[in-house]
Length: 253
Ligand SMILES: Cc1cc2nc3c(=O)[nH]c(=O)nc-3n(C[C@H](O)[C@H](O)[C@H](O)COP(=O)(O)O)c2cc1C
Image (cartoon, rainbow, N blue to C red; front, side, top):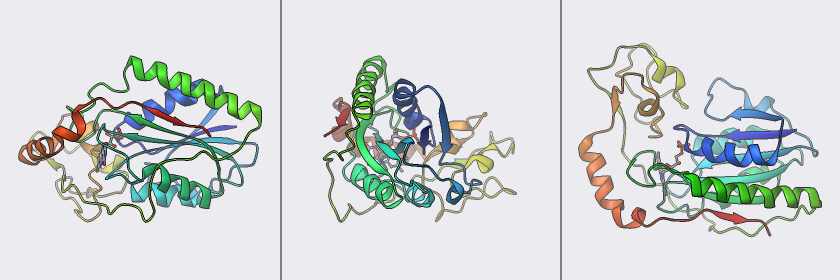
C-alpha cells in the first residue's frame, strides 16, 4: 500500500504531496497529520509499504507537532519518500530533522524532495506555486523515485542540513477574529493544535498557537487576520531572501 502522510495547514504541502503521490501510485491511504483527534500511535505500516511523508518548513525546521505525530506512527521498515515544502526563503535543517524523525519511527528513507509553495503567512512570496513548471518538474521527480522503488535499491540519499538543528524563532504572527466572525466555529474545530477556544472563538491560547494560518485560510467569512503591521514588517524583513525564484530539488542517491 502507498501512504500519503501529510501535515498541511493551508494546503501548499498537500498540493506538492498529491502531485508526487498521484504519479508514484494508484491506490493510496491518506493520513492527515493536522487531525488532532486521530490516534497516530494506532497506525502501523509494513516492510512492503511505501509512505510519502510531507511537511512544511517552519523556521527551517519540521513543525514540532508534526514531529510528535510522525514519531507515534509505527513505520515497521516501510520505505519512505520525504518531502519538505517551503515558502521560497530556505528550508535549512527541515529534511534532516524529518529524516531523523522518520528513521526513529521505523521508516527506511529512499528519497527526499524539497519543493516550493506559496508562503502561507506572507502570501506575496512564491505566489501561485506550485505552478505548472513545478508540476512538470515534480512529475519528473516522481518518475525517478518510482524507478528507484522498482529497482529494489533502498539506499538512503544524502540530504542537506545540520545537527544540532537550527533554533526555532517564533513568528509572533497570531491570527485574531475580527468583527466579521459569525461564530461558526470551523476555525476551532480544524485548528491542528486546538489553540482556539471552542466556546469563545476570540480567545486564543497564544502558547499553543503555531501560527500555521489554518484558521485564516479556511474561515468562510475571511474573518481571521494577522496584524497588518506585523505582515508589513515580515514582508520587509524577508523581501531580499524570498524574492528570487528557488527551484525544487530531488535527493535520490
Ligand atoms: C510559522 C511558519 C514558519 C515558516 N517558516 C518558513 C521558513 O523558514 N522558510 C520558508 O521558506 N518558508 C517558511 N514558511 C512558509 C511555509 O513553509 C510554506 O508556505 C508552506 O508551503 C506552508 O505549508 P502549508 O501550505 O501546507 O500550510 C513558514 C510558514 C509558517 C506558517
